[in-house]
Length: 349
Image (cartoon, rainbow, N blue to C red; front, side, top):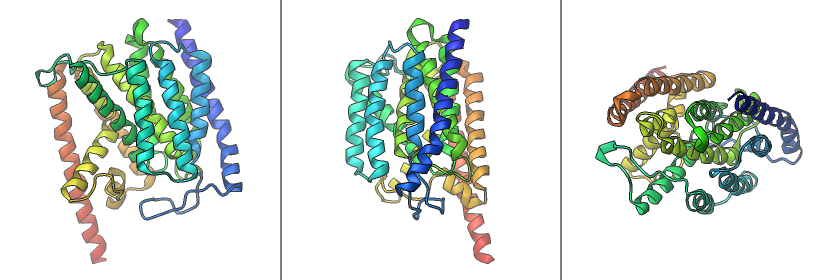
């Protein structure tokens, strides 16, 4: 156990140091070559800013994992998927590509971990009375989960430090669980989690407000894909009561934001894939929160939900899901009501 902890510390430290030393060079090159993100109607930043932070995160994560971690039990295939997503994300950060091409590459990366590594959700563990899943249903639902979580991290990446903070919270939580309960089959996923925590933390040193670099699609797709696999393996580990609901709680803010935004767009008669400023961080900014205040508030919400689902996991999946659903509705009402009141005050002024 002590040796495993030492390896985790070394992998975290290596990833962190590689990322934190790589970012300044990436920023310098991006400015020299004019590889900068232009502000637009959806963005909050006002200055030209590099979008290549994912390069540093990828370098730290990959090097630490291949040096210190055991690559068995599907980790090798996870890394293969990460490499594919890294290059499509990098291309999108350099020259914008269509959503269809990005989806096709996500489909390929998902296929690698599902069909070659056999990483998939095989049971609902009693939710709505559903236990083991048929093979076809298992593959379909796993595909939906991986694509959904991957893109939820991409969608929440709208403020300085927000996506990075939520990724660190989720990965650290999963990592602790894998270390404590993983056993021989899942313990190496603790290294996956903490290698990513190190890389993102090193990047976050330059991404917190006012950010001098963004993670871009390179970073958000990489983080989302890794977290989706961690969530699936956490559920399949079956060492935690109500594991599916606990996994949703660990990813509460990204999942809540994605479901809420898609629902608003659909009910408004719009395509769910058309960008807008209805994300939870946009709403909090409209209420009057500062950028830092918004990030800290959403991080605090996610931590509170995690503490709740961890503390009351014995309640079972259904009750935890109901409580999170009720909280989501109350939170949505809060965002809508206070946004309207704030807008009325501004119009009167």
